[in-house]
Length: 334
Image 1: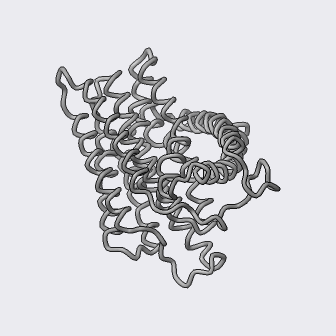
Image 2: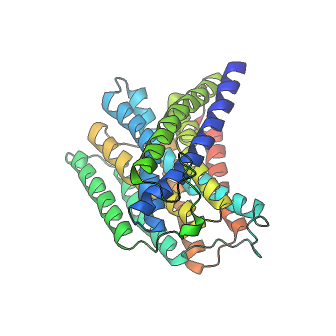
Image 3: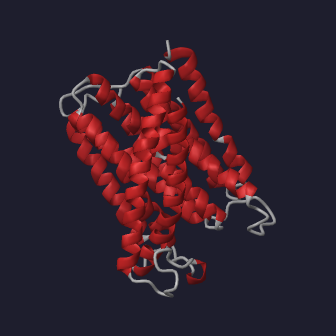
């Protein structure tokens, strides 16, 4: 257990440091491509950090030889959105409160495009409801609907690029860490830094997931529950770390765009993989995770629709994850 805790701590630190390099590199990468801030967060950053967990889901559902292995893939596909919609947003709120004085803010309000974020929540909710609904029924051509989810994500990417806001201000871009003395680093250097940081994030996340699975085994939890409760916390850690780093820099729109983009990926690509390779039928814990995720999204939608979101209100959404943990502990862990 001592080795598990040590590896758990070291991998978490490695993920955070790698995320520092990643957010720095992805900002310069987007800057060189002349992309807007929201597109950098919702498309480039989200897709980059979603690659490791999407690969895990693909390997589990496509090459898993047992139903338990496939269950891990489905659990990850449902647990990811739950973690992002609850814990990731709560981290943004907590970071904003903690760093308010450093950022010289007179209040704890999140400085973002509230209307855009409310539309993002509504779009995600629509896709997610379909995703959960398909888990309750069985019919012959259901696997083909996976193509619809892939098309939905492609449409989302096109929309984000076309309607993205202005590029981040140049004076806010910190020097590229791989070549700090260069005022305008090339696209190649930015891409190299992003790639190297993603490799470290992927390896450290794999180690982190392994330690969480070891903890789940020590608690006598089934692979299904580990996939729902513990693994998503690890696989969504890069997105959460990115959000934390960006909020510390006063860039909430990048932080929340990253979370929104990651949520849309989790609502579409893992769902498509699950539909292609599994029956995609939900049991009690999966259905409960879907319902609680939807409730959290409705809460966030109402919050952003009203505008002037206080960081303290974002902390409240973490309670939905707490409710899910209690529900699983009381009703499904036996």
